[in-house]
Image (tube, rainbow, N blue to C red; front, side, top):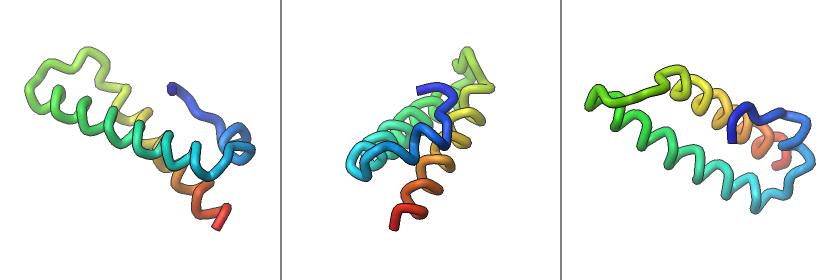
Length: 64
């Protein structure tokens, strides 16, 4: 789920957005754990996941 686009997210159903939100949170938590252990291979991925998560939350709030 790299590089989510806001336009794509706006056409997504609310249930699917919730699922993406949960998945992104899980991935971010795993990556942060690996980073704390010093075993992360792609440190830029943390920033990318945080931005994707923010995009999903923004679209979810717009739909409310």
